Image (cartoon, rainbow, N blue to C red):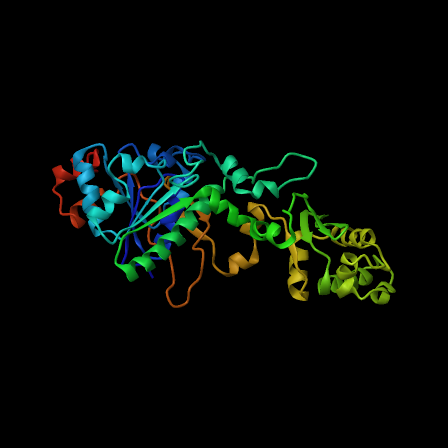
Amino acid sequence: MLSPYTVLDLTDEKGELAGMVLGDLGADVIKVEPPSGSPSRAMGPFLDDAPEMERSLQYFAFNRNKRGISLDLEAEAGREALFSLVEKADFIIESARPGEMAGRGLGFEAMRQANPRIVYVAITPFGQDGPYADFPASDLTLAALGGPMSLQGHPDRPPVRLSLPQAWLHASVEAAVGALTAHALMLRTDQAQFVDVSAQTAMIWTMLQGMVAHSVQGRDFNRRGSIVQLGTVNVQLVHECADGYVVIFPIGGALAKMVEWWVRDGIVPEDWLTAEDWPMYHVKLLQQQPVAHTIEEVLDAVGAYVRDKTKNQLLEQGLAEGVSIAPVNNMEDLTRFRQLQERGFWLTAPLPNGQVAQVPGIFANLSETPMKVHRWAPKLGEHTGEVLGDLLGLATSQIAAASGRALE
């Protein structure tokens, strides 16, 4: 889809997924690293028995479908090469501190002088300006200031963060979307565009309906752990099963079907089938109307039913009979998830240490314009000669001066 376009990826770990998404969509993504390599190359986990600069699985995971070059942007030759690349590029993505690239003469104003049609995307914690722009930031503080942590955790305990860093991944995907949106505007106006991506703002979008709760009901949602409130009634959502936990919201038609399961397994008497208008049970709870069986009885039946069944058994049964049951999966569970297997999601990747591994694949299967992995994460400077020589026509000595490294 994006094969006519060229992307210059100057990001570190805070934005590398943005370039990868555009690369998966077919763009020619050129990963520009300093001579010492992207800081993400120093981030674990690390492979054993791999070259020092290729050991990082963090780097490997988010830099596929990119060509990799080294440029010394502190040297005049490196800067000149970058501007020459900008003239031929369609997008630039960077994740430096606010104003840092402009201060080095490499910001949006300088780049659009070189290419009046460039789309320049900057990823920062809180945007380029504003009261928080220069605040220090981490995944933890961005998740807190963005809002999701206000909804996570038990109300009687401190909020909790997600198990793995997520803020920069959300920001990166928003950056890819912003880049394409801005490019559509550039095509209409024939003018360069600047996309200012705030990781804090990206995290706000992960709150889903929590973003608009106050506008709808006059108050924000509060964290309630695994409890959802139906009027004055608290409903437990997470239930222990034979090999972990599942999430079940016993309302509507799903509850009516589950009552049939409970009767069939002898968990509740047969008269439960007609004791209630089960699809409307939750409405009666919301309206505080009398019910034949309390919510505590219903939840006890849910717990008794799932206790001796596995997550996958419950998921498959729910899919077959129209009941939403969500397993609480870990990574090992996901590698065995039938839908991902049948969709061909997992790919076999050659790791830098000579081994192979099963890794997450392309984010969507498209029939008319299928996406695929053309190349895995590049070695440091792997395509420097190819890009600077073939694309810019630089001689070997000029390439060495621009890259700050001897060609391999």
